[in-house]
Amino acid sequence: MPSELDFLIVGSGLYGAVFAHEAHKRGKRVKVIDKRSHLGGNIYCKEIEGIQVHQYGAHIFHTNDETIWSYVNQFTKFNNYINSPMAFSKGKLYNLPFNMNTFYQLWGVTTPQEAHNVLQEQITKYGYAEPKNLEEQALSLVGKDIYETLIKEYTEKQWGKPANQLPSFIIKRLPVRLRFDNNYFNDRFQGIPEGGYNCLINALLKDIATEVGVDYFQNRNHFDQLAEQVVYTGKIDEFFDYEFGQLAYRSLRFETEILDIDNFQGNAVINYNDKNTPFTRIIEHKHFEFGTQSKTVITKEYPQNWDLAKEAYYPINDEHNQAIYKKYQAKADTLPNVIFGGRLAEYRYYDMHQIIASALKAVKIAFKE
Ligand code: UDP
Image (cartoon, rainbow, N blue to C red; front, top):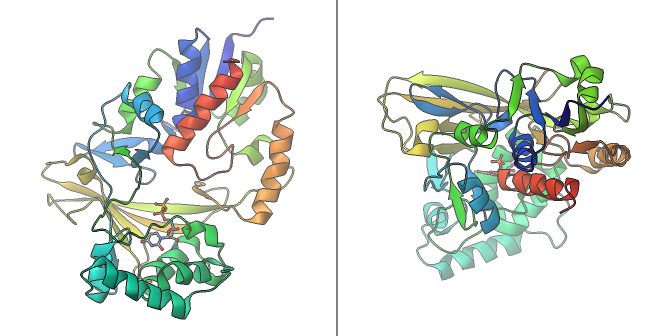
C-alpha cells in the first residue's frame, strides 16, 4: 500500500520546521508531529503581558553566514538587537565579553597597551603551557582575576562540577577583545524575529499539516507506516531504546515572574557569576524587542542535573558520551528511511544558525541536489 506521506517529521523545532518547509516546497506530502502542546521546540515563545517570553531559555539569532541570514529573513523580519550581557559578581557589574570595558572595570586600565600588559602578566604568572582542564585553560587565556571574578563560579554552577574536572573546550571560544566593544558575538548578522520566534516557525510551517501533543513513541508502528521517510529530531538514544546506554545532558530550571514595573534590570541578559546566587542569569524578555509595555517578565535560570523526567538542554560532550553517541550514529546510518537531525538527534550543542545549516544540508542529500 503506498504511504500517505512522503515525510513524517518528528519534532517541530527549527530543524524539523526547516526540513518540513523545504520538502513541502518541493511538492512532497509532509506532516509534522510534536509531543509538546505547541510547535517550535525550544525556540517557542509564550506571550505574557504582551511580551514574547522565551520559554526554553534565551535565544539570540546570530550568524556569519549571509546565506543563512537571508534564509531566515525571507520568513520574518529580524530586529537590530545586539546581545551585550552584563555580569554581576561579588557586588559589582562588569561588561561581557571580556573587552576594554571589562578590563577598565577590573583594573582601571584605560588603554589597550595597559590592558595587554596586565593580561600578559597574569597569564605568565598563572597560565599553563599545556592546559589539561577548563581551569587551566581559563588561567592560560585570561589569568587569575578574570577567572576568579567571572568564570570559575559561573562555570561550576552551570556544569555542576569543579572547573578542574571539566573539559577545556567549553570556554575555548570566549573572546578577549582589546576594544571597547560589548557585542557578545563576533558574527556579522544578529537579531531577534520581530514578534518573537513563533513568527519564524509559523512561517516555515505555513500550509503544512501539524499535530501537537502527539508522542511518536506511543504509536511508533502507525507513524512509521504513514510515511516513506521519517525525519527524527528527538533524542537519538531514545530512538534506539537506549540499547547502548543513555546519553547524558545538563538540564535547566526556569523561574518566571511578572513584575509590576516597566524595567527591572535595564538589559535583556545579566549573568550572576558568583556562587552566592544560585541561578546563572536573569533574562528580562522585553529588552530583546525594545518593549515598552507597562509590566515586565523576568526569568531566573537555574542549572540542574538531568534525568529522563527533565528537559535535555546541554549535551555533555565528553569522551564517554561521544563514544556512546558514535555507536548510535553508526546504527542510524544503517536506516535509509530515517533522517536524524538537530541538537538531540545529532547530540551537539548547536546554535540556531548551525541547526538551519544542518537541516538544509540534509535536504540537499535527501533530494540529491
Ligand atoms: N562563561 C563564564 N562566564 C560567563 C559566561 C560564560 O565563565 O559570564 C563560560 C561558562 O563556562 C559557559 C561557557 O562560558 O558554560 C559558554 O558560555 P555561553 O554564554 O556561550 O553559553 P550559553 O549561553 O550557550 O549557555
